Image: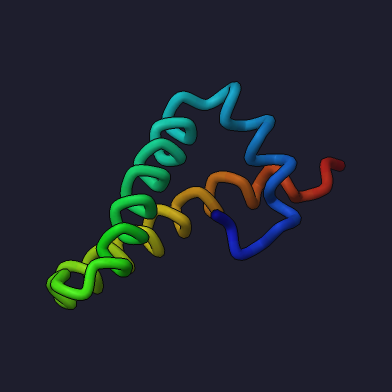
Length: 75
């Protein structure tokens, strides 16, 4: 899911503690699964595929924003 593999650990930890993050992960799974299916369909509408690509990127961005503070060293 993530473009930054270093966030996978914090993502796993935070998703247990943060219901919003877990919902985003579920939404990403649904959207990315649909996108993958549409990409396999030669009759799929390219505009809808593009909308799903944008949606997946936006969800991924939100997940990254939630995980980045967890990566910051504590003082």
